[in-house]
Each structure stands twice: as structure tokens, then as C-alpha cells.
Length: 115
Image 1 (tube, rainbow, N blue to C red):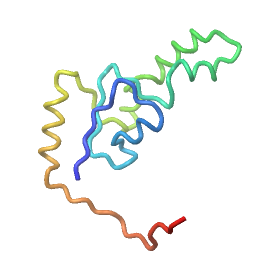
Image 2 (image 1 turned 90 degrees about the horizontal axis):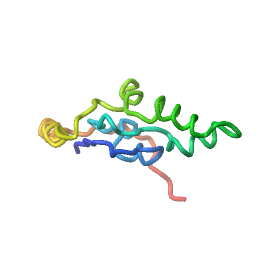
Image 3 (image 1 turned 180 degrees about the vertical axis):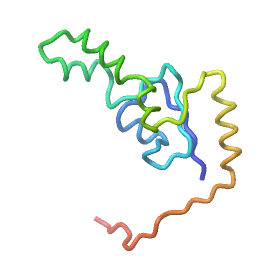
Image 4 (image 1 turned 120 degrees about the vertical axis):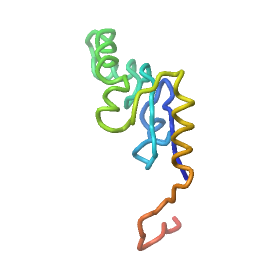
């Protein structure tokens, strides 16, 4: 089955991964230019990074460096940045392109054993 996703405005950690990301073989993954894609939110990260220092400054630095879709796009985790007004059109085009997709899973020697 086809898997196309437009990331929500804030996609952090495991939530990002499970939202049809490239890590889980998603076919197309887009983000808006204002999206925040990171391991965790800027405020929480700044509290860990800036122990005993200026947390407001650390939050701003984290937001500039990590909490934007540019780094995710540079690393291939996002296929492109979309303006909100073009999101529906692009997703529909991708779904049309992928409508006949056949999924080939790799051969597995053993199934998951019950625990």
C-alpha cells in the first residue's frame, strides 16, 4: 500500500517516526516550512542542554539549529517542503502515482516467536 505523509506542525521523536516516516518505508514524506521536526521539543531539550545556563538562549539556539524541517530535508527524511496551499494537490498526485504499488518484503527465515 502507498504511504504518503505531510508532517504535522510539530513532529518529535517517536511520534515523527511512526507518522509514515522514511524510517518505516514511507513512500513520500513532506513538511511545511514552519514544521518542527526534532528529537524533542526545544524547551525540554534546552533544559537538558543548558543546565545552570541561560535556558531562553539555549531554546532559541535549539529552535534555529534543530527544530525546523531544513535539517530533516538535508538528511533525506523529508522529500520536500510544501506550502500549506499546495499540500492537498501534491498528496493526491503522489497517491495517484502510487495506486498500483506492489510491496515486496524481504524473505525472513524465522517468524516472530511468541513471548
